[in-house]
Image (cartoon, rainbow, N blue to C red; front, side):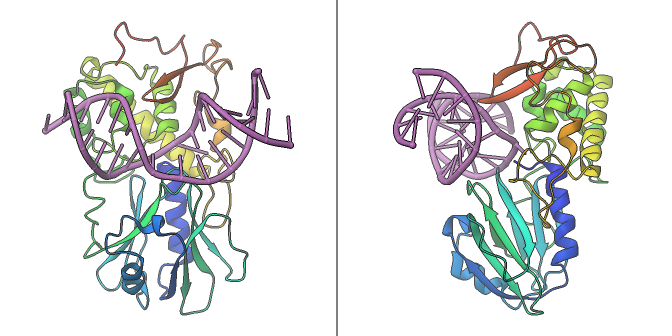
Length: 283
DNA sequence: ACCCACCCCTGGGCGC
DNA sequence: TGCGCCCAGGGGTGGG
């Protein structure tokens, strides 16, 4: 569910809500939530209790909280994960998976995840860049993101532009919503072959990716339903600014042509037939 | 070294 | 009402 803007909203909430605090108790209520912690829930708990959370970091859609031990608590929200900072006496959420209480007795941290595609783990020595995150590329909001390297690598691919945007090892943080929105802005169909995209058009596309991510972040992200919320339970407002995603049959905001929906990679893609003509041989 | 189909889950909405 | 099907913002993995 959440893409870069939504995950960044959560990161900021963690920064305000839990960074600087010392973990008292960890309660893993569903083992699947820590399946990416190979040593198991008990080890996960032991590595966290008594540790202080030093900062809140993000790359793409991955989050991590370096600990004063030099390890890092890592998290990915998957399709439906939430990290909520709530009073300890608030009722258990239906899909509450992990609870963290703190030594200061203040609000607790809860990992809630309906579909359990997300999860948490403690990565040894991962404070700088957890090994489980290192395989993905930097995201376009990272100051060290290399635009020209992205352009070069995109054009070296032999695939479709949308597949490339969704490939987290090329550029991270983009999911189905923002891929469609950036392609609409760039007037490119997602099936356009990457090798046929000129350098200027690739730079233009990257500019639109960066712009739509920033604009969404300013609106608190996109929240179609209560599954995506900040650590404070607040929904984002960017849905009203979407031009393509989820708008099948509605007139294009640029040319009035009804937005089309296509099935692609076993998921939906939305685009304007007028502004984003399908290539002769889509990929 | 790629790339893709498949799998992992729960729940809401819809047609019958 | 109920059932079955489709759909949903994610990534990892094993095979080609």
